[in-house]
Image 1 (cartoon, rainbow, N blue to C red):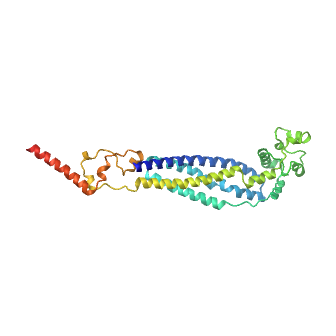
Image 2: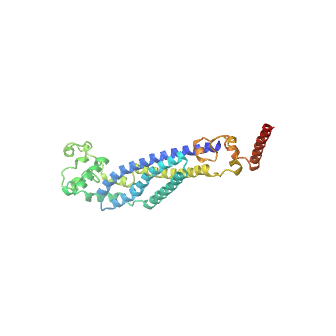
Image 3: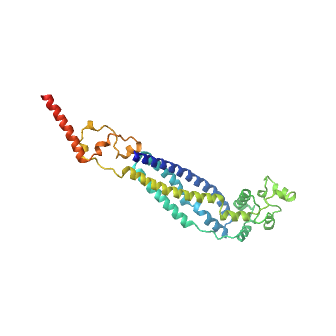
Length: 316
């Protein structure tokens, strides 16, 4: 019974871990997709500058295609692990352990290989001004869209202050994306009526904070470490479950094999892993299988003597 309880406990833990794998992998994919959208905007604004390289170094470990593919594969592996745990199948559990080991090694190698501290300073934010003169030009619509998206999302205007737009371009007022309450012509109205309607903080400090790392990036790093720890725990539990199910599988002893069928009731034996998995082990079935050889022979001899005496009485 103790062995059955341990198998049942191991299976419950593996069920919980596989569910945790699904949840964490989906969270990683969702947050990575959200960050990738902002990262594309930042890379557009920082093209051909030191800031671009710093942004890539910071975010490549979490949006790298290898990490994304590993998370997608982890969802499939978790389904296989669930099925293997449900059926207590040796092949599925072995395949599950091997895949978890491969995914763990790939994630660890990718994280170590791509991790690097970005060498960026606040003074480097001034290089963003070189991207401002092309704002609004017909052939630079992608740059215009990137500026508008960044200023609207991060609630900033210009690089240091909103007057950067007046200095670096021929515009008479900032873009409408600088307004706290955006509508067509809001920047012109704010420029001549009320400057408080414009975002007062520049985008340079916002860009610096983003490159150094956001809260979402910290969440992704925490999820990555959690997935690694959960994978180690799942591999340990899988090996333990395989050991509990298959470590003492032995063919039945010859005396027990030739025992009369009426001496052993139908039922699963204690050494059957599927019986342990389903919890249908019979209390009476394993008795003959676990007898010592001389005890088994003695029991059979007594039964044969009883049958012989019965036949002699009937003949007499």
